[in-house]
Structures are given as C-alpha cells and as structure tokens.
Amino acid sequence: MTSTLLIVQFVLAIIITITVLLQKSSSIGLGAYSGSNESLFGAKGPGNFLSKATMVLGLLFVINTIYLGYIYNQNKLESAVDNVKTESLIPSTPEKEKAPAAPLAPVAPVLPTEPAGK
Image (cartoon, rainbow, N blue to C red; front, side, top):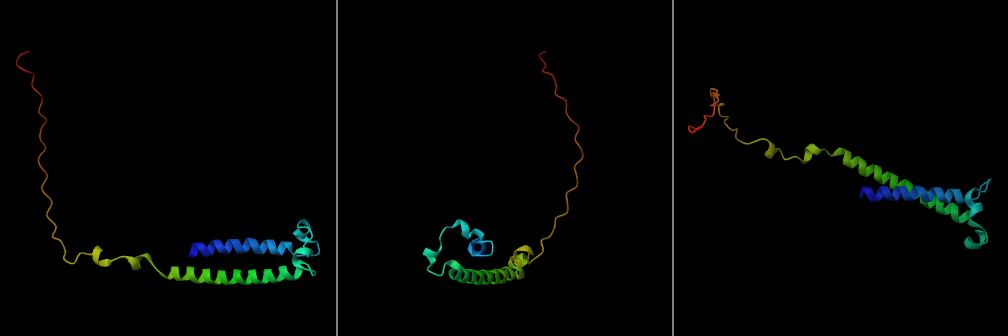
C-alpha cells in the first residue's frame, strides 16, 4: 500500500510540474512549445483550465502527503520485538546441564610396522 502511494506521489509531482510550466507567464514558459492551445481549451485559452488542474493536483498531492505521513508514523510505533513469541525463547522448565566430561589423556601415536617379508 505504501509503495503504491509513494509511486502516486512521484507521478503527481511530475504532473504538477508540467502543468505549472505549461501555464502562461511573463516569459510564456513551456506554453510556447505546445502550439496553439486556444483551440484545444476553448476561447479563453488554457489559463483557466490549467490553473484549475493545478489546484486539483496540488490538493491531491497534499492529501497524499498527509496520508503517507500518517501511515509511516503508524509503522514507526510498531516494534519488531512486539512480534516475537517470548514463550519460544524462554523454556518453561530449565534444562539441567551435564558436567563436562574430563579430557582423556593423549594417546601416543603408533608407528606403522614393516611387513615381516622384507
């Protein structure tokens, strides 16, 4: 779920950037490269449509940001220790440890004998 919302966040950021750059400004922006937008968006041009689209996309971006922050904050409150079953880690009855066995005396190496026929 969080990965999907994170991808939506990146896509919204890219689309908002494009719509802001397409809006008419004092230096015209990227609107100069898109040709005659007035026939596509109506008689008033793209100004009204792009400003409304920017507002809607900005609102979606802010809502998505708040929801992502809420989800990540909920995950932060959980701990990995909360998921560990303590019954399996601590035995209910202690096991009696056996005393370690005494070490054996070292055995001297035996040299191989030659066969009697030689």
